[in-house]
Image (cartoon, rainbow, N blue to C red; front, top):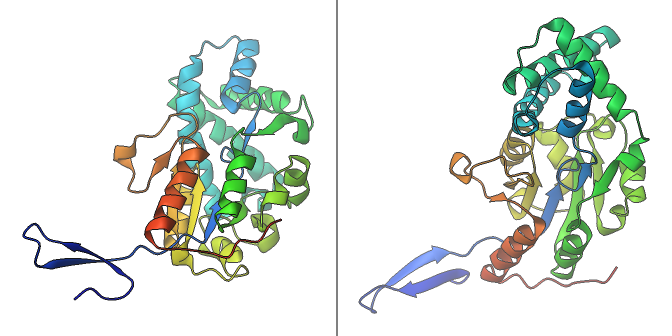
Length: 278
């Protein structure tokens, strides 16, 4: 018997039924901020390359780009133990030098403490060239994709690990108006991958976590955290640094793919939301 709410398909003989549960809709998409919605311009690895040039250190910019994934994963692991911003100043600096050493070593550059420290200071100087607001730009597909999700009746929220409330920041970047909620770890008191960071988004919006999808660029903080919170997850890979074969969740290069994925899922789920205009 085909039960209500299920999709039923005749088997190859045409007289028995194979019954599959209909997929649940995706009623909320939450986004990581950095390297998901916005990009640093120039990129981190380009700025590190500038710093290494000034130090006379030979490097391969492609190796710096690829090894940035290793450095960011190191940051995520350590930040999950104790937020870096909460460490004493001397421990913060020691962490950032080790972060740099990890990045250089992963890029094939033998780095002792002194080189890592010099590269860290040079990299920091590159970041300080311009104010924060002028250093970041939204990716070109962000606003249109958020609009398409809104038109499809899907709520949108930002979940960002950041040292201060990012609301003014994303308002300046003309993203905030397309979001139903903005969650900053420093405000809620928890860092991704802590599930409470994700709960701070889907609970106020009244969404079952099984009907929410989080997308971000970090396998550990974004994907693992979202799955542990009971959500679905996807990995955004804007710089082609991840192999789908190594991940159990969808790996997407852009937000067109994301929106199409959500709409196809919701069509299969028979999701017909009431859509209100902004």
